[in-house]
Length: 211
Image 1 (cartoon, one colour):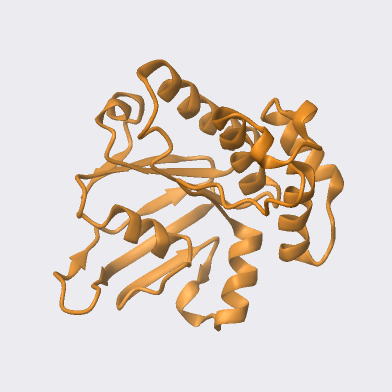
Image 2 (cartoon, one colour):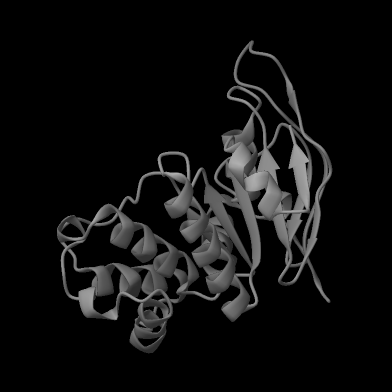
């Protein structure tokens, strides 16, 4: 099993605010990790660091064998697009494009090519192929969530990061979303990290870290 994620001595702070110190993380292909903690503990900051969206003030992070600190801003953007799938709390679709076109755009930004086959496969895997040519605004919240996961997986990333995917859901739908994330990542062989304050998920993930 190849190693997908390794972090060491990560620290970050915003201005004069308290310094956030994060535990070292190690994750292999297809493995799962739940990161929990109360508000203000730095969960979203850690997810942004893991996703290459912000650089830590100290420490190192390597994904798929690549040390992110060695990459320029442009190269980091390309590496993120090709290797890291991120499901944020807000979908951030291009509103004027269909769901299918949003997925194709994600593939084009990563590789310079429209991988229409991959886009269709991702929509099939998430059970929303019949909604491919609808605008995102015409989808239900649950369908938009599925489309977000499909978009995150379209480039076959090494790691999938999900930020608070169940925070506004009831018990039944929270478990459905977790099962959906696990199934989608398992089908693509992608490592999965869920960042949440939702204590209901602890029983679902034996591999977890509390901040």
